[in-house]
View 1 (cartoon, rainbow, N blue to C red):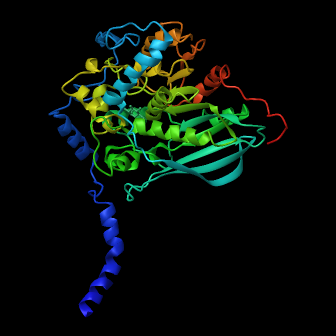
View 2 (cartoon, protein in one colour; view 1 turned 60 degrees about the vertical axis):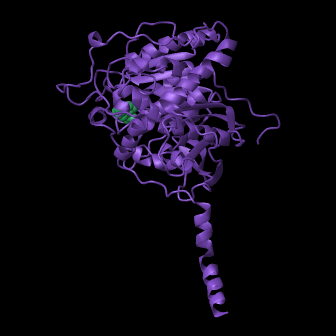
Length: 475
Ligand code: GCU
C-alpha cells in the first residue's frame, strides 16, 4: 500500500516534466557557430572546398577585388523571356503562368531558399501608441510586436518588432513606406561579415539622414503618408550561428537547414510580408499602397521582398550589391564567392554554396536581372551612392553591374506594358533615369539611401496617391 502511494506521489510530481518530454521528443535545438553550420552545409552538399571571395581591403592581395572594367570577363545572361523548354514568352499571360513561376522556383531552390509551407502564424499586438512630432509634423507612432506561434519548439521565441508612424491629422488610410531598419547602439547588427566588408565599411560615409536636410521619415510624413520600420534581426539573426534559431530555426525545430531551405534574406522578406498582413488589418494604413525600402544587406532584402510579394506597391532598393541588384556573373567588386563564405552564406540558400565551389556563377540558372524582372510591372527604383568622389561608397557593390541588371530586366517591364529604363547607357552621378516604371539613380555621397529620397519620392508620386478623406469626415 505504502509503495503504491509513493509511486503515485512521485508520478504527480514529475508529471509535468514527463508531459514536456513527451511533447518535445525532438532533439534539443543545436548551438552551432557559423563556421560549424557552414561546414555542415558543405558536407550535406558534398562540397570539399570553396573558392576565396574578392578582397576589397587589400589591392595587392592575390584575390584583390576587380575594379577594372577591362578585366571584366564576358558573360551571357539567361534570357528572362525564354522558358526552360526553349519556348519564347510572347504574351503577359505566358509570363505570369509559365515563365515567372519557373524563375521563382529557380530563385527558391538555388539562390534564396524556400519558405517552408507550414511557417507558424504571427499574431500582431500593438504594445504602445504614442503621439510624437517628427520634424514639425504631428504623428502617431504604434509600436508593434508580431509573436510567432512557437508551440512546435517552445525554446525558440520569435517576436518581430515593427513601428508604424502616421500623420496625426490623417483623414483616412494612408500609403506607407516601410524600411528594413538597422538597429543602432554602437554598431549595426551582425557587424562586418568579411574582411573585405570591414574594409569597405570603414570607408563608407554613414547611414544617417542627409546632413541638415529632413530625415526620410519627415519627408514621407510631409506628404501625408506613413512610415514604418521593421527590425530584420528580430525575424532572423544576421549570422550563420543564428540559423538554428529565429524563424528559420523555429521551422526546423532548432536543427540545421536543408540545402533548399530559406536564408536570412528570404526570412527578412517573409517578415516584411507579415507586416503587410498586419497593415491590411489597420484602418490607418492603405495596404494597397505600401512600399519597401532598405540599404545594403537590407537593400537586398527589400528587392527580395518586392520580387516575391506582389502586394508591395513600390520598391526603393538601396546599394544592394551582390546578392541584390548586382549581376552575379560580373566579376567586379564583391563576388558570389564572398556570399558563399561563412560570413555571408546565411543570407542565401545552402544550395547557393555550390556556385562558389564545384560550380561557377555562370552555372546559376538565374541572375539578378531576373530578380528585378519579378518586380515588374510595379515601380522599382534602384539606388546607389557614387562610386568615386568625396564620401563615395566605393565600387564594392558594383553600381554599373546593377544598372546592367536593370537594363536586362527591361524586356519584362515592356512585355507587361510598362516603360523600362529607356537607355542602356550608364548615367552620370545625379542623373536620374526615372521616366519609366524601372528607375535608377546614383547620388553623391556614401553608403546610404538618404540623398536619393527626394528623387525616389518624386518618382513614387506618379504611382502612390493619398486618397481623399472618406465621405462623412473624420474617422
Ligand atoms: C558588406 C557586404 C555587402 C553588404 C554590406 C552591408 O560590405 O559585402 O554585400 O551589402 O556589407 O550590408 O553593409
